[in-house]
Amino acid sequence: MDQDRLAFARWQLAANQAVGEAVRRYLFDRPRQINMIDIGQSRATDKPKPVIRVHVEQFIERPQLESLGRRSVTEEPIQGYEVEVIEGPYRQQLWSGRGSFYQRCDPLVGGVSVGAEYFSPGTLGGIVRDRETRRLMVLSNWHVLVVRWGLRRGQRIYQPGRRDGGADADEIGVLERDAMDSGLDAAVAVLNGRRQVSARQAGGRLVTGSRRPAIGMPVEKSGRTTGVTHGRITGMFGVQRLSYGWMERVIRDVVTIDPREGPIVSSGGDSGSWWIDSDTGAAVGLHFAGSDYPERALAMDMEEVLTALRVDIPALL
Amino acid sequence: MHQRPDAAWWARARQARDQLAARYLTHPDVSLIDIGDDPLGLSALPVLRIHLRRGDGSDLLLPTEIASIPVRVVRGDYRPAR
Image 1 (cartoon, each protein chain N blue to C red):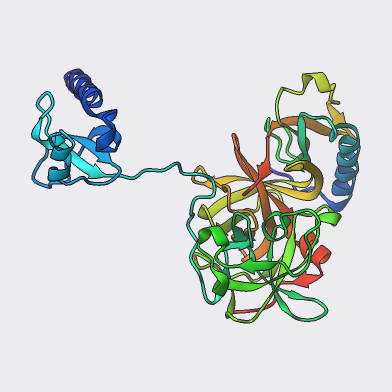
Image 2: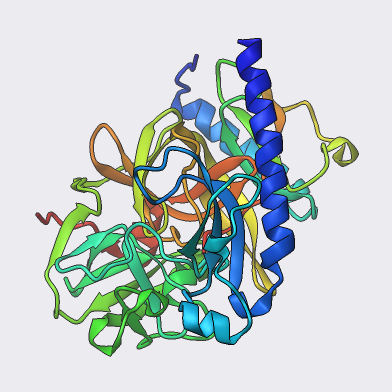
C-alpha cells in the first residue's frame, strides 16, 4: 500500500515537472494560441501511458506553423512524455450558460427555458388557467417574465429564452400580470396558442394540481439549469427581504427547501420552477431564490401564488 | 423526529413570526424569518428561524423564545435564482 502511494507520489512529481516544462516552452507563445496544458489520457486508444496535452484555440496546420518559425509541439517529447494537441476553445461558464432544459419544446411543458425580450432566461414553471377568462397562461417569476420596474402588459415572452437561442418565431405569448405588489415574485403570460400545452414537467413528471406545502414533505423540481433535483421542505411561512438590483422587496409565504438527493437543489436560471410534492404530483411551491453556501432553495407557497394571480392549474395531459 | 403541530400552534407560531419580523427584518444581516426544522435538533416541534446573511446574530440580542417557541439562527444569504 505504502509502496503504491510512494510510486504515485513519484509519478505525480515527474508529471508536474513535465507539465511545468511544457508550460515554460509553449503556453505564452502567442502564435500557437494555447489555452491550457495538462497531462492526461491520449486520444489514441493504443497509448496507455499519459501524454502532455496542449489545448489550443484552433488547430494550426504545420506549414503555417513553420511560416511562423515554429515546429509542431508533437515533434518534441518532454521528459519522456509524448505531446498531443487538442482543440479546446474554452470560455468562462457564466451563470447564464445553457442548462439542462433549454431547447424549444412543443408541447410546452414545465421546467424549460423561458424569458422576456432582452433578459436572461429563467424557467417556465408550468401551465395555468385564468379563473375568469379561462385563457391558458404560463406561470414563472416576476424577475423572469417582467424583470423591469414599471414594465407591464404586452411584453413578449419567448421559449426558449432569447439568450438560450429563442428567435422571433419562438414567441409563445405576452406578459399579462404579476404579483410583486402582493409580496410574491410571480407573473403570468397569456399564451398565443401557437404551441400545444401539457401538464408534464421536463423529465416526465405529471402535475396533478396544487396543495399546501408541509414541513418534511419530499419535493422535486424541473429547472432550466439544473434539470430534475430533489429536496425536502424544512421551513414555511417565511418573510424575506430580497434585493432586486437596486430595489429591495419583502417576499412572503416563503418555503425553504434543502437538498434530499445529491448536493444541488437549484442554481441560476432555475427561477420560476415549480416544486412538486414527490408523493402526489401536486405543485406546492414556485421557486424564486437560493443560496450556494449552504445549498438551499426558496419557493413561495403555490396556493398563495395562484390566488394572488387569479389562476388555477388546469387538468391537462 | 417531528411532531405535527395543530392549527392553534400554527396560528401562535405565525403571530410569533410576525413579532420577530417586525423587530428584525429590517436589520441588514437578516435575510429571512420563517418557521421550520430546528437546526439544533433539540425541538420536536418546528422553531422560529432567523436566517442571517453574515455574523452569528450575537449583536441582535435575539430572544431565546417567543410564545414558548424557540428562536434559532440559520445561515442563509439568498439571491434571486437567475
